[in-house]
Image 1 (cartoon, helix red, strand yellow):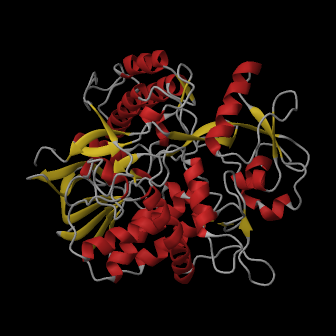
Image 2 (cartoon, rainbow, N blue to C red; image 1 turned 90 degrees about the vertical axis):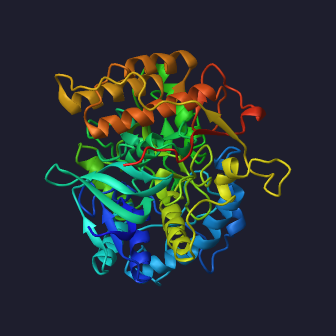
Image 3 (cartoon, rainbow, N blue to C red; image 1 turned 120 degrees about the vertical axis):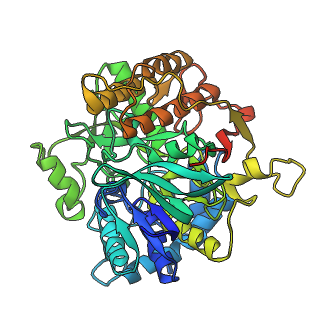
Length: 526
């Protein structure tokens, strides 16, 4: 690639949205993805996009209130306001690009209700194939631009000179290492669901962007908040197929081994996952059941899910469906302001890799695709306006403007943690190679840092990670993010949102803080 105005890392909804907008504005854009262009976590998203559209009885104030409630006190209200106010326009733009959402016989958009939402506001495509449709539309739009696309290439580390990001070092399809330079670099690399053995995330979700940021000293926050989706299909397939939140929105019930209901299915995901895990431990089982037998027109409304369950010999009209929580979404990430600027000039972040403050301690269902659609274009707009570094807005106020006497006094304060990205790493391959190293890490994290955690389990997990070989770059990234998660989870001696400490079950007012690792971009130059 030639030197670029903007280098986008990742081909999910955030990366593609940014590339389309930047190319339309005449910027020289390059997009790097480690798989194929259409291969990202976005295409796995089922439920839909939460947005208050014209003519709804709903309101953006209700959407904001639902998001704040789910976030358990750690959402940045300004960021949520941006999300709910700008979201409808982004949905309209996506439709204009060619995305086809489900409509009724009169042409009106169909809307579902999901856990934590007070109103039906989830627009969807193909029943439960929304991510695939959004990905299709955006990939076609990117291919129609002048953006330079490089597939099958893995970003390895940020290029940093004089405290500024100037691109990345990357492994190309032939295995060589190349430097890709750009005036601005956008991390849109997605999440880190591969930290855990049971996950809804594809194999590519190895926390690459967060890991590169941590190694460069860039501020990263709230990575202890890994959300587990409560209703993943309990089956050998990996990633685990999702039984969409919309099923519960349409009346499906969660039952234990005795057939009893024990939780309000429409509570946010952290509440349902926690209740399910406790009931599974109590009954000594590895899964529970979702009863969707009372739903009408299951095959027509949820064709993707119907195909998944029929593939393992189940009929959703007659059979209860086996379910168990699975790692799903990282609510924290690279700390940003309201325009996606990180603590390092020249480096931006959007989508699941970012901590905008929108999700707080637990993401509200179907806000994830919307976040990428809203905040990625804001990055481009800020670059076009001449911005280079962060300002005191959104979640970034925790570190850019920590003075409680300032006008930003409503900001959630930061608690800075000492953190080393290299502690205990064994820099050689084990006999089992990268696959075995990844499996060792995933088993340790699942047992000690999953839905329920304690100081003892977290400390034991940290010791076990010291024996994981870190030669493979993706395993190295998983180890970096895993250690960050453990450090933050140990420091957060409370239970809040998707972080539950069995030794500290109460929420503490003094821990209404962002756990921040890294500072302001002190990475070594290349």
